[in-house]
Length: 424
Ligand SMILES: Cc1ncc(COP(=O)(O)O)c(C=O)c1O
Image (cartoon, rainbow, N blue to C red; front, side, top):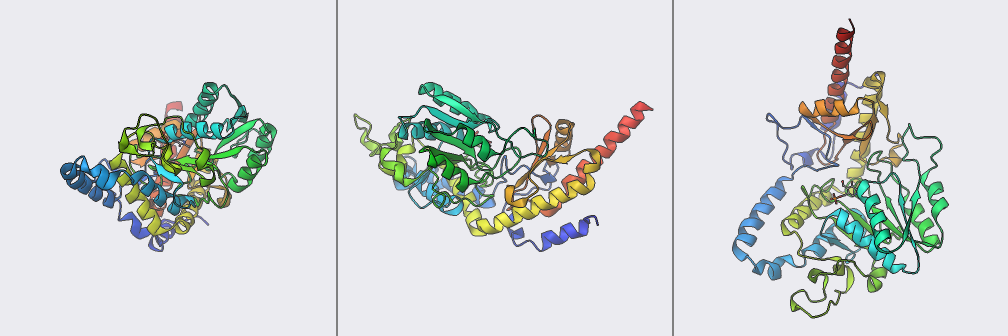
C-alpha cells in the first residue's frame, strides 16, 4: 500500500525532535526553500547563533576589542573542540581543536601522521573519496618524497561495477609495513555508505600504520566513538550537520597517546607554548593545542558552539534514529513514486550501513536538480548522474521529504508530457 500524505504528517506530529525545527530560522516567504534537503552541504541557521553572534560582535568585539583575546577568545579552539569531542566524536577532553578548514586540517593530520611513522614511505587513500582528500594525499606524499596507494573499492552503490571489491578487501590489497597512514571517509560523500570504523582501524593498525578518518558527513548525523575505536587522527566539517554556518572552522582530533611526538607542518604562534611571548624559537604547546597555526576565527567558533549545543541537547541517539526514519521514508517514497521514471536508489538500503543522506541515480539528475532548485526544492547534483538529498534530523521534516518527492514526480510527468508533445 502506498504511503499517504496523512501518514507523513503523522510522522511529524509524533517526532520527538520536532521542537528543534522551531529553533532554526525556517523562512516561508518568497525565495525561501519549500524543501531544504541540503543540510549536509550547509546546515540551517540556529536562532541562538544569530543572537549569540550579535552579542559577541557588539559586546566583545565592539566593546572589549583586543582585550577579548585574553579575556575570552584564546582558549576557544580547545573549549569548542572539547564540546565537539564529547557531543559527537566520542573523544575525551584535550584531543580536539576547532580551527581552519577541513582541507587545511587534512593536510595537517596527513603530515603529522607521516611524521609519526617517518620510517615508512606510503600513504593510502580511497579512489572514490572526496576530491580535497585525494588531492592532499597526493600533495603530501609529493612534499615528503612518499608514494600513494589507492584503495580501489566499491562505493557501495547499486550500479557499482561488480568487479569493484568491498573496502576491506581492497584495503587489504594495499596494506603492508611500508604504509605510514590511511585516510578514509566514515560516511561516503556521495552514497552515504558508512565504513566499518572499528574494523578498518584495526586492520590498518595491525600493520603498524595510523588510521586517519574524515568525519565530514558523519559528525552530527551518525554516532562516532573515536576513543573507543582507537582511531589515531580525524578531521571534519562543522557547517553540515553541526550547523556552524558557511565556512565555519573545522575540527581536528589527535589521540592523546600521539601528542608528545606530534609535529605539525604549519607551526604558528597560536600553537606555541606561550602565544604572546614572541619567543625567538618555536616551542609547541603541550597537547592538542600545538595543531593550531594562526589566529582562529572567533565568530566562527561561537557559531560552532551554538550549533553543537543543539546537537548535545537533542542527543546523538535520537538524531541517529530520526536520520534512519527520514532516509527510510525517502527511499520508500522513491520506490513508490519515482522508480517508474527510472530513478534508482544508489545508497545502501540497509539503514545500518547508511548515513543521513540518500543518493538517487538518474541520467537527467543535473536538469532535475537545477529546475527543482529554482522552485525551492533544494538538493545537490553530484557527478555524473546523482541527485543527493541530505536529511538533517534537527531541521528536516517528514513533510519536506514528501514535498520533494512529489515535486520530482511532477517534474518527470511534465517532462514526459513535453517529450510526447515534441514527438507528435
Ligand atoms: C568529505 C569531505 N571532506 C572534506 C571537505 C572539505 O571541506 P572544506 O571545504 O571545508 O575544507 C568536504 C566538503 O564538503 C567534504 O565533504
